[in-house]
Image (cartoon, rainbow, N blue to C red; front, side):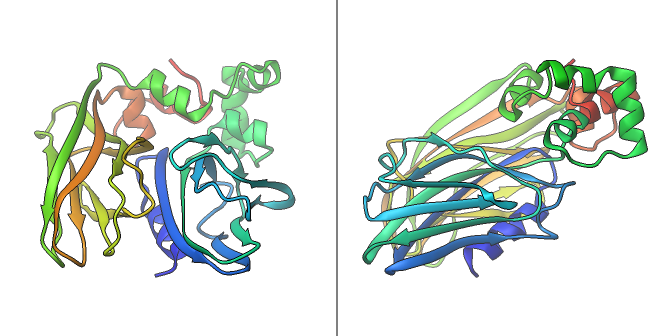
Length: 303
C-alpha cells in the first residue's frame, strides 16, 4: 500500500481528536521529483483538516523538500535539513489538499524522514482564524462566548499542543525502554497497558522510537479495538531521539514488533501518559459530557 493510502486510512480512523500521527518513511530517491504524499478530499476537508507539526529528515544537500497545502502559494522548500531526529517546526494547515515531494539532484539510497500530522476537529476560534465556514450554531455560540473578539485580540485559538497540555490533568507517565526478541513473520508483543472499566482515566501514546533496522521491521500500535491502528516502519527511526505522537485510548494501548527476519535484542522506547478523563475531555472525545463542556470544546475555550 502506498504511503499516502496508509496515511489516509489512519486519518479516516482517527476517533479521539485531536490526534498527532507520527509518519515515518524511508525510500530510495530517483533523480528528479519523488512524490511521497498526495492527499485530498474526502480525507481532508474543512471539517477534518490536518496540521503538519514537526519534520525530521536525512541531511542531504542534493535533496529539496517541497510541501504544499491547499494552495501552490502555501508551500515550503528547504535543502540540507537537520540531522535525523532533530525536530524542525513545519506547521502547515491543509483543509483541501496536502502534497509532499522530495526532489533529488542524484539518486539517494534510504532517504529517511519523520513528519508529525495533527488530525483535528476545528473549534469555532480556529474556524474564524483560518477563514473556514461557520454554521448558524457556530455564529450563535461565538456571540455568546465572545469568541470572535478573542480571536481578533489574539487570545484565541491556542496552539493544539498547548490546549491539550492544559486539558490533560493528573498525569502519570510511563517512560520505558524495552529490548525485544522477534520471531520472523510474527508480531511480538512489547507492552500492553489496559484500564479497568469506569476507571475515569485514559491512556495516550506520546512518543515512540526504536533502533533503526531493515528486514521490513515495523512497530504496530493497537488502540482499543483498532488492531494495528498504526504500522510504523523502524528503518527511518533513530533511537537517539523520541518522536512525538498523541494517540489516546480509552481501554487499551498495545505496542508490538514485527519483522520478516528473526531479530534479537531490538531496542524500543516509548512514553505513555495516563490522564484523568475530565468532562471537557469527554466532550472532546465525543463521549457523554455536560452542555457546558461541549460548548467550551466547540468554541475552543480552555476552562
